[in-house]
Image 1 (cartoon, helix red, strand yellow):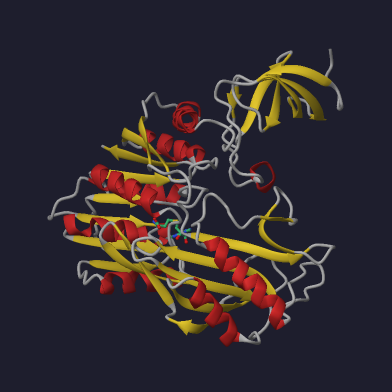
Image 2 (cartoon, helix red, strand yellow):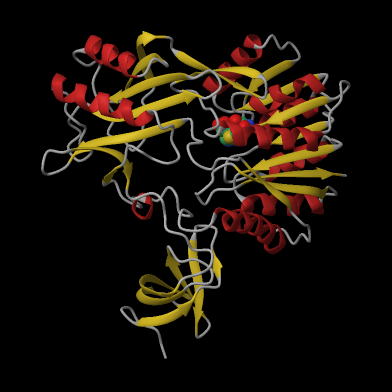
Length: 451
Ligand code: SAH
């Protein structure tokens, strides 16, 4: 039978993809089904047929998988954040470990076992940040929540299970204030309207909260009323900031901020170090998970007081700074100037004097450092999803470090890069996956390579 659009077939789901879809085979053709779980027997409605695969949607669950559970979020199938909320968490962890192992094997050609996946105790309410688009529906009801999958339609959700519980009240206060102050909501089509996003950050260790309103204007009326209501509702709010974004763009934050109450930043503690987080600065969204990751990276780096560490793609310096106590010197490299400023500030804040930071492209900086004679004992790599460039890998290998610790948010590019390292004489020794983003499809991996 040749499969056509609108066909209905019975399908057994045999695996999950790294994007969170279930996959089964129909006469040797792979069929991808969103929301399906390994072990499900389904009646599937085919919506797309390509030469080598097809896509279907669940018409009926004929026999549910033993890994299937009922999602505890009413919007998880719409918002696209928690693709794994309908499977048991233990199985999610198993799958994520498998996804890393498969990538290393298939793409990297490596036959290595991944250590037990690390996870935090509580896989809800772990995020320290929420960015909520706002708008009004046709009946004049305010919508505050998240974009639906692959769209800019807002699904109202103020009780996201990944966000701090306290955020709900703050969102409601802002909604109420906006109505009273006559603040309109931004319309992407016309570019008109004031309030674009509500952006909230919380430091779990110090219990400080920042409220940031992203606005398509220079200011807003009735600021005092807003501040009074916010601070009365949640006494942990110690910073209220306006972020000005007048561009017609998908990028959430504009480049300018104005603090209208309290401090310009909140402070959090990670691996025993203090970090100042301003509205624009990058900070890992799951602090407990980040500690698991950084501690594993530290173990793999196996530094001692005589060693020099090069931290490439260092962001605000957090990995290098968390390891500096075990090193002679730490050098961080990062391409974003603001992040480097934050990294320097973070070093000062913690009275760290053996760390320096360079704002440059990783490949260029590594070459310069190599030419200056730097031979770090350990190099940490934590690139964005696309992984390291060939130039970076070549230069790292030229530096002949004892160990390379590669932290990655994309198993596929990690595997590709590990293969190159292996061809150049470095061997993958240990691999650990860390579940930094429970209930979503993302998984973080840390790898130790040595000569
Ligand atoms: N190690 C940090 C940040 C990792 S995210 C942490 O754990 O928080 C990856 C970082 O690489 C980002 O900060 C990004 O700005 C930076 N980056 C991206 N391309 C780069 C390049 N070509 N050279 C240097 N840094 C780069």
